[in-house]
Length: 400
Image (cartoon, rainbow, N blue to C red; front, side, top):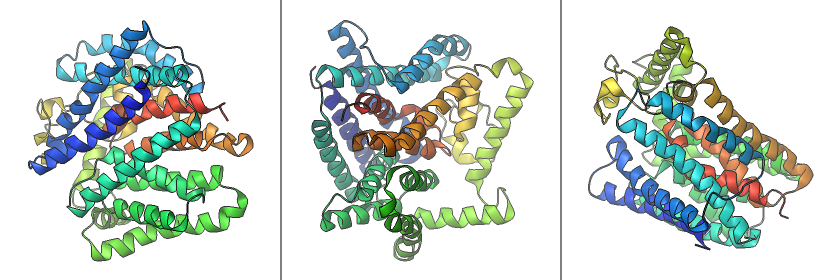
């Protein structure tokens, strides 16, 4: 198990891309395929991490800012599980497994890096290969009209944007990376565009030197314009539709006529707030694992028809803040805010401490995946790259 950190990375990336492609080829895509795609990489990762823990005879020791927050998260798992017992059913099991996987990946990944004394150059070599492989797969998906896996889109795009900002590649590699991120961006959703913009802003303010600002700042302005105007003019793109919807909402407000998807998100949020107001005992710790909402009065048929247990037991709450508050309460919200604050604090310190670029990348990813999950919360809870990034950031923080 000396290569378990590599096993986690390769297993996640390969299974996610392979299974997504297979489901698309057999004609199953969208919300109906999501539970099965996630199960295809979550279960093997659970088995791998549990086997590692059993083999070394316990949970590896961890240290660092993220480690302290993760330990707090662990303390509240029994509470959320105990509260969730009353919810029962499939979602109780899946939520618990998501939480368990998050914890195991963090401890095992950090422990494996420390046990093998992994260097930055060794890790960078593996990461570079994985990113290039993933870019190739996503480009293949784009060419054949397949929807790229959203989390891999964020994983690759954050890496590309950060690498471009470092000015360390030759001009041909820069052009290839720039073209790739522009092309992939046309397939992204609102969360993806939000995450890309947030990463660019973080790079401008926290990462690049002042002498590079003259290049980076125009890039932050130009990239969104190029994405929308150039690609949307010649290729069918979801960005153009979502941009038009967003502008219409800004001008006329949220309504079913403007965007049913956005209206549904606000409806879910209102149901959550109404539920918490009716039962203030849920505010500290939420409704626990397996919590669901009754969406039988929803106007969005796609939501009602895509629920495994029916609209009366809708598990997916789109807005991230509403989902966290409903399941984990104020305590859970505080924990995820601590993850975000740690990431921003690490990026702010980067200019002074000049930590290794890997440290910066992983903190950028933490910020990006949280931003990506704002309109679609389920991504945050099932993303193996989040605990990987937290663990790698803690490990590489003081290793020059």
